Image (cartoon, rainbow, N blue to C red):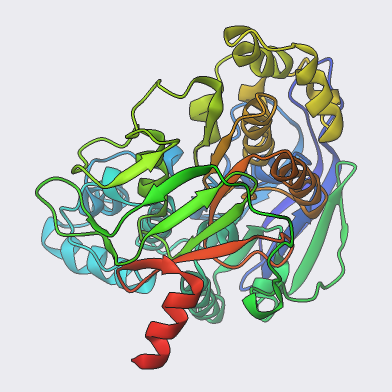
Length: 453
């Protein structure tokens, strides 16, 4: 039974740009799972917004919607969807709009949270959740009103492996109940058992895609780089309990950890483990934190004291973009620190993004914004790069481009600490730091503790 169909859809973002959707057609039936793959910036998220019926820019073509069609959408950046301050109020918002009696709401809200594996108090402030936890929250906020069509934008990138496993179970049950699912995903293999139709969005049209082999997070095959260690220590973390003021410890570090010039260290942990908080603490911008025995470039972390020697990439790249064009965005910090402006075009060329030089960074896709925000830091050639989930939203081509840039910087003596939900088999890191079960340590110690346990 057809519930929604797109016929001859044409869509673009400006008269000086080619259409990103060009005579696109798609039919979705009840209980089907469609997965859409495609290059970063190819229009996948825009397609989801058209399906959701809330694309704010005009488009051409026809959209058929079945009567009483209810659509749930979880965007790539869940922060863009947050409407309320607490977890319970956020999920109850849809129920309020449907006129559900107040005495029935609590049970429905709690059930929705359990379905997505988010076990937290209903009065928990949304602002304290990690990005991955907010993604689960937005899932719960959509599922609570029982949509007949669920749209998901890049769930694999925002969720840890346990979250992906739980999501597979949730989606399987939804499909069995007749709910249709459309997901945009750079790693379709993570949901291969559910997908009925795999599409590649290319040249503005959908064509049948090819099944991919599953990506692996097997750390056994990751060999540390053989480059010599630089003597200068950039980050030193002494044993401590990481906690916010008046709160229980988020995790405990029982050993001394250090990162030297030229090293690449990957900090791996589940959603909400504390990865982003640690990175922001190292950069000196984490608020409400206790005094911790941490030094960065032999100084206690503090905002503004490192100049161009330290770069921080946040999980929400749009918070770091404020200029009118991509080129002026990259040139901003170069001008501030009196560095050669030619570096901006050079890094765009290396990332194969020079075609975006005159584009507004605020109109780019999430993945494009992520790589532009990273490029604005890379062109400074800092001593230390702190990168929060730098590969989120990127296709394989641009992942390879970023990897090449990071290896070049490492060879030049830049220390790099990056976070991820899982191992990075495509990047030759020197060491892994793990946050597991409330403990921060290097990979060897975590493994040893697990064997002893």
